[in-house]
Length: 345
Image (cartoon, rainbow, N blue to C red; front, side):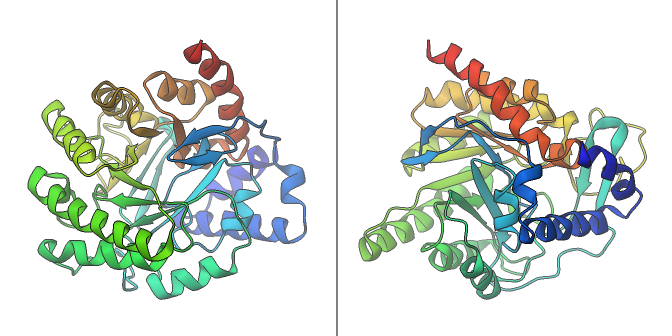
């Protein structure tokens, strides 16, 4: 209710400014102890996945809290898990503003942030200040000026840097806003990258005695052959999960709308079917052997259920929060509960 009242004001602001104002407001309410009281109650709905116990299956997608500054406030909204980042080894400013655009008629966003973040050292410092001890995913990537042949160096450095704090780590090879990044989804490049990252994880596991699950975040703009190749690589390297999906380069469903021709990744309602198609194809490939996290186009409880029915074990929200507010978390959790019982029966 409160978000419905605040949304017209927020939508009168530049989208990136509104994003910052919203997070600052959440921080202020959390500091006063009010945010938890205002957030709709999310019923417990434990999900065991990746060797972890999730209190409910509705998570926050990476990108909303890029620098791990707002973890505690966001956790107060009832998420079953929080994913932060993308973090790169060195700080980078990302692309020039404006770089975030609303398409309200379509329930969509276009962003071309370009992995703007404070870098690994400052990111780690932010993590150390968070009190949250729930399930925390950390999304890692490469710096813009790191050549593809050295990309694995960046991913391994980030994995080492966040290993002690992460519940799981997601490998982002699918953002459309870092030139050449999606080439890492191609068979040979992906194989080389995953071999290095998994070897690093194995070394860290031996040293720490703790195994941190690895997830791969992929694009929705993949044909059946490429999905099959990715599934083969995931099995070969024994990854724990796949996040399906990131944003899309397609403009289907937004043609002719203001900002539709802006460069960047499209998210929200128009990519729901595209993302769910990839999710369902992966579900058929894995037959339950790999955890699937459904993301892309969840703006209602019905949308969340569609992901579960397509094979997702967990779901993640981002754009839906912009249009629906934090009440969407509880709505999705309540909708998923009966659908999950039905699928288990």
